[in-house]
Image (cartoon, rainbow, N blue to C red; front, side, top):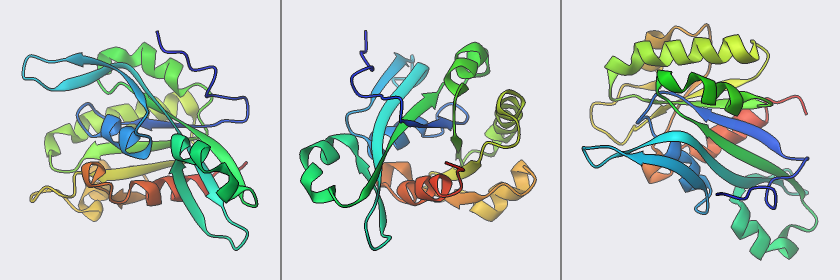
Length: 201
């Protein structure tokens, strides 16, 4: 059993990482927080898929001169004195299972979310219909007021579609689509900061 009460507080800003299965949600969370926890299932092909949730925690640090950064919670804990004059806010990263049959789990995960990072595998066009269905489910549960940014993930793959192509394929009415490569840690902190700055806190 994973004990989360000791690291998640009432001041936590809850961000849900959603999207189709195998899009890179778990990798995104674990790159942001190396101590993140996951409830995964091993598939016959040797890959894993999230069947419950991913949980991670980072801090959003804004220095006195306005510079912002995302820091893994463990790194922050080990260097608190460095940030004593900064504005520090705790961010909970909650990964939602991507398969359609986990709708009830997703609904519970989405409860209380302040924003969504919606991760898709931009190298697999066959997941577009699934991505749109998940997006519509999220909007049905949360409404249109919760900010959402799409990560066109796996840009490190040669045949990955550009954010502009992904935006056209998804047709999500002007939702921002940003490039990322979770495995290379490219674009994920920038996207999270973009999302956080769009929140009404």
